Image (tube, rainbow, N blue to C red; front, side, top):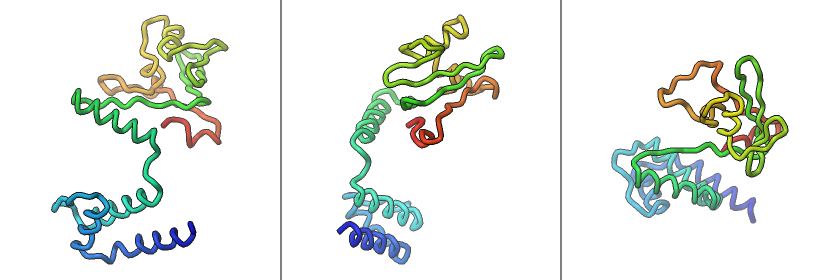
Length: 170
């Protein structure tokens, strides 16, 4: 009965804006199994409760995403810093212009292809292109420099075929 369940979920979501603050806080407590902050505005509570209702109805985030989020939280707790590494999907093409030449790298399942040769890392390709020890993610614009400044000519853009555009980088 997915159709009937969808109708009930839609109906419950559409009623949220009519609930008063007390009712929204009660609903929050049932959904989150914890008290809500008294500082949350009514508008934010409506949105947060709606999000949680949809999450519960759809089964929540996929297991791989949950694992990644736990790993990020653990790293933040241990180091006090947050590093989020871009996840490149196979088929993604990275483009970079260097000294008047365009360079295209194809992301494969477990390595990269540039000029018909496979490399284990983007840094190895960046070293071949520049002739110096270079950070591949920095060179291809996947990570910003420490100073946070790039001239527009230095940043590369991930390029994908139209069907892959939605899955280019996770």
